[in-house]
Amino acid sequence: MDIKKIRFVEPGNRPYRKSLKNSFVYDRYIRTPALGLITLATVAKRSVSDTYMYSEAISKIVWDDVLDADVIFIGIFTFNANRGYELAEYIRKNSSAVIVIGGLHASLNYEEAVKYADYVILGEGDESVPKLIDELKNDRVPDFEGLAYIRDGEIIKTGEPIVPHNIDIIPDRNLCYNYDKMVGHSTIWPQVHASRGCPHNCAYCALVKHYGRKVRTRSPENVVEDIKETIAFHRKKKRLAEILWITDDNFFADRKWAVSVLNAIIESGIKYKFTIQVRYEVGFDDEMLELLKRAGFDELSMGIEFLEDEAFEQYEKKSTYSEILRSVKNIQAHGMRVRGLFIVGADNHTKGVGKRLADFVIEHNICGVLIQSMYFIPGTPVYDTHKDKLIDNDWSRCIGKVVHYPEKISPYDLQKEIIYASSHIYSFKRLLSALFKKRGLERILFIGEFFWQMSVRSDLKKELPWLKEISEKSGLYK
Image 1 (cartoon, helix red, strand yellow):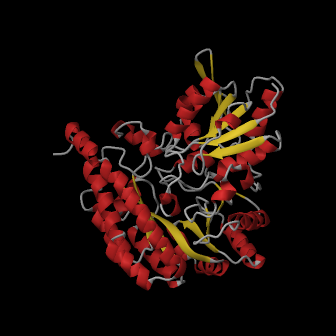
Image 2 (spheres, helix red, strand yellow):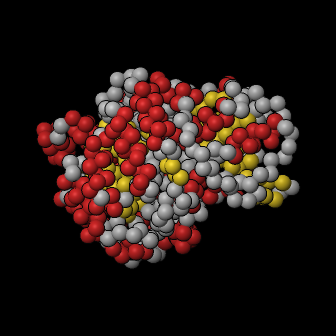
Image 3 (cartoon, rainbow, N blue to C red):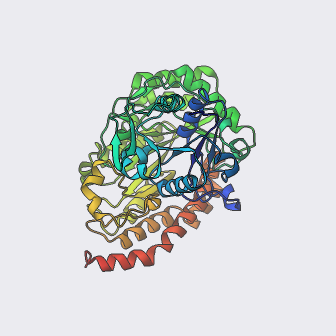
């Protein structure tokens, strides 16, 4: 097969369109393009020079440029899987391209994804993508480990993917159409991913299943160079909020390496603000907290998840409420803000969970929140135990909305609890307080989140009549 042109496509759960909301509401019609897919496009370009990517997070797809490609890769997460399948069907009807689907959702749910593609790449694609290109170029039937495809009506899985260990790849963000023109939006975050894998085993986490429990890292020098290039790329246009997000799932799992990366950032002289996701244990590591502060980290996003020890135990999240609280206080004592990532809809949750969450956030000065209803991604332990409780298989709703029938609270009431928590944490009174009492980046972030949460609540409220109807019809809640 003569391969002269390759295109990558990132579907949008809500495809991009121009809107004033793009300037201050994240994920309404705009979001940061997937760094993983840009990385794979960077890898593919080594094999085929005419390689390019479109992301519905920031632009419309230029179909005249895509449909005549020889191979088209589509990367999906659970929340945009339905849209990905829609695009794949459109491509199949209008192009002779080989269609390849990959990404977290496709890897864990390949029996579904393979119906829409010629091949599904399982796991990480750093080595699988060039292998597949080479096999197709040489007119061989791809059969290396980590593929799924249909032959004679039967789904074939070639085996578990081989995990790539050399991940010192700096993604070429210029390969993503219109990315350089959109970076002025404060809702598009500069991002760098420095390591993969997590040693923990939280029951709802799909990332462990996808990346594995063995942590693999990029060299500190490579990470710092990526940070420099990312900052330069995003400074092409003036931004209100200059803050870079290191998106690792567990940056601190390899402590020695994490310390070396933070020291490398400090020694590089980079002057920028950073944020990162953390587990509560980091809050007990004073040396690490001091390094984070010196490196430019003013804010840490903590996966708090629950406020009840019962829920921590049930979902194998190895933490306790008292440890969470102690960690939050120590991080704040080191001069850094704490952002809270929360999950509602655990089996023990009842009416009032939204109020408890809001009270906790306000009382303990959590600077911002992401509230999600319990999610169930195929391939995770919690999916296996709760799949019979799912409302439906509309993956597009897996963006924080209620997607199942909880044990002790109806879907309708649980969605109202999320709305309650959001409206109290981001009340007009607290907005006024932020305007007068907060300064600099902290003020900008709260204002942006105020409007974002307003948009989120609007979407949640639209579903309430439907959720009320299905809750009543279920007969589960008296």
